[in-house]
View 1 (cartoon, rainbow, N blue to C red):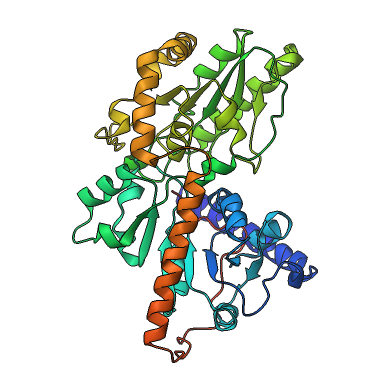
View 2: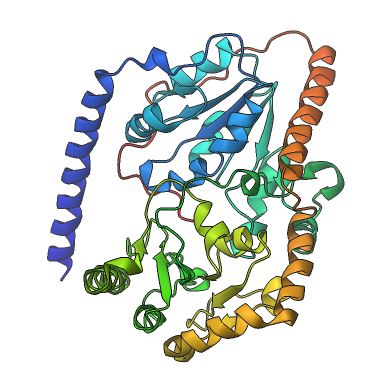
Length: 431
């Protein structure tokens, strides 16, 4: 009923407002100078306007940014109080809190920023992008064949750091009049050089299966999530006694679809029950901040169409992909997905046989090796990090070239100083 729905929306707004006030009070008690960058040093800013629900997008950049910060000063610019609270304790590089536009202007004026990196397409990126005398660079938060990877928003940025040849082909096929040769710079996947986290279990001969589904999506064309449609695969693996399941769902799983959340909670309960029956099994529900050990340690990974496909692809290890059940979900099979090992919903209960098959299939391994090179180039450890830092150095040299041609500092752009970043609970960006 409309009245019930409206009451629910109103209650949600009140709860978010109370939570936001509580967060701001907590933040007011913290000494933000301890993690703030020193004036006059930052060359690379990383702009993150989202709330904590999307922290996974910036977390995966922590290690490459920390490595870059050894030679080129880096700072993350945060707009949300709740996000700032989180980064105070976990960011490996300095963090600038700029909730108001006036704070953002003060930060920009106090730093010799050569470029700003953006990990998503949040509409609030435009509050930073109005500043000239710096490059604006889209670095994204993953490599995939989602429709998000060819959005026309790429044209908004001066440059884009992309993974490899597959990304160039994707953009060239979709974007009109986009200068790939100059504006798209190949860096591979530097995150793969810094897989994070220690194993939370002791290897014991069990076959480790990572199940890393995405969320349900906000429109039919992006309905890639498998938690509800393929949930039979988890109990099938739990029942064997020879598999260890690591369940790492997308942080947004179930935020829009109650049935999807119910299926997600059901999988968590199954894992708890299986561990009670056999504590040595060591099945895991994993929602921690570290991402990397899961991809590197799993004998087989099962993912949806998402960046997790390509993060796993970079390891060259066996991979299965859950085929979306929605007929409207866009599946681009012109690239790796055309050669992938698929799991349909009606095959979910037969997952043990499929896992055994990909573990022993030499043809599948050869296909993985080919597509890993196509998407990421040289995946030798350390190469992508060097390519990322070389791309930063290239743009810094171009910055010096253009700055020398126009030495006068510009006036600060006008803006409403009352504009603020998102408070806790912001969900403005969902890809």
